[in-house]
Length: 232
Image 1 (tube, rainbow, N blue to C red):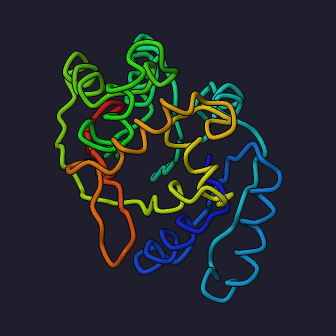
Image 2 (image 1 turned 180 degrees about the horizontal axis):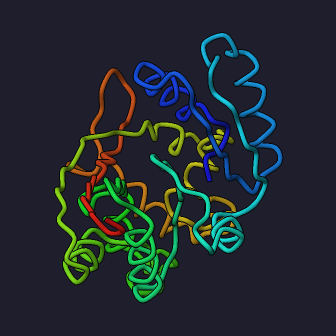
Protein backbone atom coordinates (compact mmCIF):
# COMPACT_ATOMS: atom_id res chain seq x y z
CA UNK A 1 0.00 0.00 0.00
CA UNK A 2 1.39 3.36 -1.00
CA UNK A 3 -1.27 6.02 -0.42
CA UNK A 4 -1.39 9.09 -2.68
CA UNK A 5 2.12 8.59 -4.06
CA UNK A 6 3.79 11.72 -2.70
CA UNK A 7 6.81 9.84 -1.35
CA UNK A 8 6.88 7.32 -4.20
CA UNK A 9 7.05 10.01 -6.89
CA UNK A 10 10.10 11.49 -5.18
CA UNK A 11 11.75 8.05 -5.09
CA UNK A 12 10.98 7.54 -8.78
CA UNK A 13 12.69 10.82 -9.60
CA UNK A 14 15.80 9.66 -7.76
CA UNK A 15 15.75 6.28 -9.51
CA UNK A 16 15.42 7.97 -12.90
CA UNK A 17 18.82 9.58 -12.38
CA UNK A 18 20.25 6.08 -12.78
CA UNK A 19 17.63 4.23 -14.85
CA UNK A 20 16.20 5.72 -18.06
CA UNK A 21 13.17 3.40 -18.22
CA UNK A 22 11.21 2.23 -15.19
CA UNK A 23 8.17 -0.05 -14.89
CA UNK A 24 6.25 0.87 -11.73
CA UNK A 25 3.56 -1.42 -10.31
CA UNK A 26 1.31 0.42 -7.84
CA UNK A 27 -0.58 -1.79 -5.37
CA UNK A 28 -3.16 0.14 -3.35
CA UNK A 29 -6.64 -1.04 -2.21
CA UNK A 30 -8.12 2.48 -2.00
CA UNK A 31 -9.54 3.81 -5.25
CA UNK A 32 -9.40 7.33 -3.83
CA UNK A 33 -5.67 7.04 -3.11
CA UNK A 34 -4.99 5.63 -6.57
CA UNK A 35 -6.86 8.56 -8.13
CA UNK A 36 -4.75 11.00 -6.08
CA UNK A 37 -1.59 9.15 -7.18
CA UNK A 38 -2.65 9.29 -10.84
CA UNK A 39 -3.39 13.01 -10.58
CA UNK A 40 0.06 13.60 -9.11
CA UNK A 41 1.67 11.61 -11.92
CA UNK A 42 -0.25 13.67 -14.48
CA UNK A 43 0.89 16.92 -12.83
CA UNK A 44 4.52 15.79 -13.00
CA UNK A 45 4.40 13.81 -16.24
CA UNK A 46 7.37 15.67 -17.73
CA UNK A 47 9.57 14.78 -14.77
CA UNK A 48 8.33 11.17 -14.90
CA UNK A 49 8.85 10.68 -18.63
CA UNK A 50 10.19 7.15 -19.00
CA UNK A 51 8.09 5.65 -16.20
CA UNK A 52 5.22 3.32 -17.12
CA UNK A 53 2.62 2.54 -14.46
CA UNK A 54 0.65 -0.63 -13.78
CA UNK A 55 -2.21 0.31 -11.44
CA UNK A 56 -3.52 -2.47 -9.16
CA UNK A 57 -6.45 -1.65 -6.88
CA UNK A 58 -5.96 -4.54 -4.46
CA UNK A 59 -4.30 -5.42 -1.18
CA UNK A 60 -0.73 -6.65 -1.06
CA UNK A 61 -2.08 -10.06 0.00
CA UNK A 62 -4.32 -10.20 -3.08
CA UNK A 63 -1.44 -9.13 -5.30
CA UNK A 64 0.91 -11.76 -3.86
CA UNK A 65 -1.74 -14.47 -4.21
CA UNK A 66 -2.23 -13.57 -7.88
CA UNK A 67 1.55 -13.63 -8.34
CA UNK A 68 2.08 -16.82 -6.33
CA UNK A 69 4.11 -18.41 -9.13
CA UNK A 70 6.66 -15.62 -8.81
CA UNK A 71 6.46 -14.79 -12.51
CA UNK A 72 6.59 -11.05 -11.84
CA UNK A 73 9.95 -9.96 -10.42
CA UNK A 74 10.96 -6.62 -8.96
CA UNK A 75 14.33 -4.91 -8.54
CA UNK A 76 13.03 -2.47 -5.92
CA UNK A 77 10.02 -2.61 -3.59
CA UNK A 78 8.74 0.12 -1.27
CA UNK A 79 5.69 -0.20 0.95
CA UNK A 80 4.04 1.62 3.83
CA UNK A 81 1.95 -0.29 6.37
CA UNK A 82 0.31 1.46 9.32
CA UNK A 83 -0.17 -0.87 12.27
CA UNK A 84 -1.88 0.44 15.40
CA UNK A 85 -2.97 -2.64 17.33
CA UNK A 86 -1.49 -6.11 16.89
CA UNK A 87 -0.96 -9.22 19.03
CA UNK A 88 2.60 -10.44 19.60
CA UNK A 89 2.08 -13.65 17.59
CA UNK A 90 0.63 -11.65 14.69
CA UNK A 91 3.57 -9.25 14.85
CA UNK A 92 6.00 -12.18 14.63
CA UNK A 93 4.12 -13.59 11.63
CA UNK A 94 3.99 -10.21 9.88
CA UNK A 95 7.70 -9.49 10.33
CA UNK A 96 8.61 -13.01 9.22
CA UNK A 97 6.50 -12.59 6.07
CA UNK A 98 8.01 -9.16 5.42
CA UNK A 99 11.53 -10.56 5.71
CA UNK A 100 10.71 -13.39 3.31
CA UNK A 101 9.56 -10.87 0.70
CA UNK A 102 12.41 -8.45 1.23
CA UNK A 103 16.06 -8.35 0.25
CA UNK A 104 17.35 -5.02 1.50
CA UNK A 105 16.19 -2.66 4.23
CA UNK A 106 13.08 -2.54 6.39
CA UNK A 107 12.29 0.74 8.15
CA UNK A 108 9.99 0.64 11.18
CA UNK A 109 8.93 3.78 13.06
CA UNK A 110 6.87 3.78 16.26
CA UNK A 111 6.27 5.92 19.30
CA UNK A 112 9.15 5.63 21.77
CA UNK A 113 8.48 4.22 25.25
CA UNK A 114 9.50 7.56 26.79
CA UNK A 115 6.92 9.52 24.80
CA UNK A 116 3.68 11.08 25.98
CA UNK A 117 1.42 8.35 24.55
CA UNK A 118 3.13 5.42 26.26
CA UNK A 119 3.56 7.22 29.56
CA UNK A 120 -0.12 8.17 29.61
CA UNK A 121 -1.04 4.54 29.02
CA UNK A 122 1.21 3.20 31.77
CA UNK A 123 0.12 5.85 34.26
CA UNK A 124 -3.65 5.69 33.83
CA UNK A 125 -4.76 2.66 31.87
CA UNK A 126 -2.34 -0.26 32.20
CA UNK A 127 -3.51 -3.57 30.74
CA UNK A 128 -7.10 -2.32 30.28
CA UNK A 129 -6.04 0.20 27.64
CA UNK A 130 -6.66 -0.86 24.01
CA UNK A 131 -3.07 0.02 23.08
CA UNK A 132 -1.81 -2.92 25.15
CA UNK A 133 -1.60 -4.59 21.72
CA UNK A 134 0.51 -1.81 20.24
CA UNK A 135 3.84 -3.00 18.82
CA UNK A 136 6.74 -2.19 21.14
CA UNK A 137 10.39 -1.77 20.24
CA UNK A 138 11.35 -4.66 22.55
CA UNK A 139 8.89 -6.98 20.80
CA UNK A 140 10.16 -5.96 17.37
CA UNK A 141 13.80 -6.41 18.40
CA UNK A 142 13.00 -9.85 19.83
CA UNK A 143 11.25 -10.82 16.60
CA UNK A 144 14.21 -9.77 14.46
CA UNK A 145 16.63 -11.56 16.79
CA UNK A 146 14.65 -14.79 16.53
CA UNK A 147 14.70 -14.43 12.73
CA UNK A 148 18.46 -13.83 12.71
CA UNK A 149 17.98 -10.40 11.15
CA UNK A 150 20.45 -7.62 11.98
CA UNK A 151 19.11 -4.20 12.87
CA UNK A 152 20.03 -0.73 14.13
CA UNK A 153 17.93 1.52 16.36
CA UNK A 154 17.72 5.23 17.03
CA UNK A 155 15.36 7.57 18.87
CA UNK A 156 14.42 10.79 17.05
CA UNK A 157 13.11 13.66 19.22
CA UNK A 158 9.69 15.08 18.41
CA UNK A 159 6.95 17.21 19.89
CA UNK A 160 3.23 17.88 19.53
CA UNK A 161 1.41 21.12 20.35
CA UNK A 162 -1.28 20.08 22.87
CA UNK A 163 -2.27 23.58 24.00
CA UNK A 164 -5.79 23.15 22.62
CA UNK A 165 -6.39 20.21 25.00
CA UNK A 166 -6.60 22.75 27.81
CA UNK A 167 -9.01 25.06 25.96
CA UNK A 168 -12.53 24.05 26.99
CA UNK A 169 -14.22 25.46 23.87
CA UNK A 170 -11.71 24.05 21.36
CA UNK A 171 -13.05 21.37 19.02
CA UNK A 172 -9.49 20.56 17.95
CA UNK A 173 -8.54 20.13 21.61
CA UNK A 174 -11.50 17.81 22.15
CA UNK A 175 -10.44 15.58 19.25
CA UNK A 176 -6.76 15.74 20.21
CA UNK A 177 -7.59 14.62 23.75
CA UNK A 178 -9.55 11.68 22.32
CA UNK A 179 -6.51 10.82 20.19
CA UNK A 180 -4.03 11.09 23.05
CA UNK A 181 -6.15 8.89 25.32
CA UNK A 182 -7.38 6.68 22.44
CA UNK A 183 -10.97 6.95 23.65
CA UNK A 184 -13.88 8.73 21.97
CA UNK A 185 -15.73 11.44 23.88
CA UNK A 186 -13.25 11.87 26.72
CA UNK A 187 -14.09 15.49 27.43
CA UNK A 188 -17.87 14.98 27.29
CA UNK A 189 -18.19 11.56 28.92
CA UNK A 190 -15.02 11.08 30.99
CA UNK A 191 -15.04 11.46 34.80
CA UNK A 192 -14.19 15.14 35.49
CA UNK A 193 -11.77 14.32 38.30
CA UNK A 194 -9.87 11.83 36.13
CA UNK A 195 -9.66 14.33 33.27
CA UNK A 196 -8.33 16.94 35.69
CA UNK A 197 -5.59 14.57 36.89
CA UNK A 198 -4.72 13.60 33.31
CA UNK A 199 -4.39 17.24 32.25
CA UNK A 200 -2.18 17.94 35.26
CA UNK A 201 -0.04 14.96 34.28
CA UNK A 202 0.25 16.28 30.71
CA UNK A 203 1.77 19.47 32.12
CA UNK A 204 4.44 17.72 34.22
CA UNK A 205 8.14 18.04 33.46
CA UNK A 206 9.37 15.35 31.11
CA UNK A 207 5.92 14.92 29.58
CA UNK A 208 5.67 18.41 28.11
CA UNK A 209 7.27 21.84 28.12
CA UNK A 210 6.08 25.40 27.57
CA UNK A 211 7.52 27.55 24.79
CA UNK A 212 6.20 30.97 23.77
CA UNK A 213 3.02 30.36 25.75
CA UNK A 214 2.28 27.03 24.01
CA UNK A 215 2.37 23.55 25.56
CA UNK A 216 4.32 20.89 23.67
CA UNK A 217 4.20 17.19 24.55
CA UNK A 218 7.26 15.02 23.98
CA UNK A 219 6.56 12.50 21.20
CA UNK A 220 9.93 10.93 20.28
CA UNK A 221 9.98 8.32 17.53
CA UNK A 222 11.83 5.01 17.83
CA UNK A 223 13.35 4.06 14.47
CA UNK A 224 14.44 0.50 13.67
CA UNK A 225 16.29 -0.26 10.42
CA UNK A 226 16.64 -3.97 9.69
CA UNK A 227 18.91 -5.47 7.03
CA UNK A 228 17.75 -8.73 5.50
CA UNK A 229 19.17 -10.92 2.76
CA UNK A 230 16.17 -13.25 2.59
CA UNK A 231 15.42 -14.42 -0.89
CA UNK A 232 19.05 -14.11 -1.98
